[in-house]
Length: 335
Image (cartoon, rainbow, N blue to C red):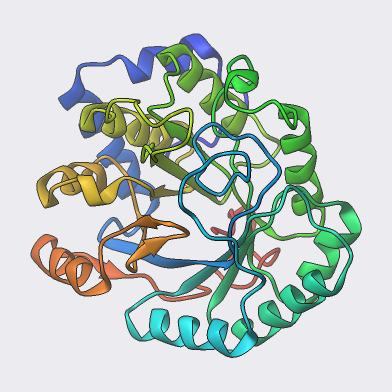
């Protein structure tokens, strides 16, 4: 069984990343089979419960108020619409609902109270609930945990060295502190990054080093391909190569063998063959449904047809129990 390590060096990760592609995919697939039911893929659905008007300056994001991207600002979604979206996602095969709000940080106000109610309601539907709400403190993380939140998403986006080129309105340390607060509240951690931002391979390796050397690996690591949006500073970035995505997924699988690796944004640009390569390289989670917050995404029906073709099956909710409760001594509870 593959050893779970928290002391990876950049040199070791670089050596893995740069291996001949077929050797890399073969090794990642082997690690995947040792640690997972490789034919099982978690399906998540992502909805925007509060859209647009964010004060941050993330260079890739259509929801930043300072960019003219055509995204309308919407107040927080009514509870009945959230429940309808959750039921539609569950009927489509999703076992997790992720709720995103375009906030810089969580504030202790009526909107956050509404989010707590949403978490409680969706959790009662026997779905894993994930939120991505920006930065939060220990008390706020505990409130979400008490409401039944299963996972919290807070991506690092890129390397610490490259971060200021992408975002200037918060620091890398801010990101890591939020992850600490989430972990302390015994909520599972979902944290990954985006490739195609104009970063170097060294930046990708540095980001993976940060994630893999956390005291506990994130239960879920999303690997996103940039979806360039007109009006953002990243609008003219070229589409990232599928082989770069495969290398990132395979490297993540090898250095974080028990983590759920999520093939996230950018799937609409990928053929079934390209996605199959990503699954072979160790991806075992996707977002399904027509939209990822504000960008297009394949439909549930399209994904189910792909699953049937590739012999994949959707993973059930809470497969490894509730957060903080391992099935076996020493086992990581997956997110």
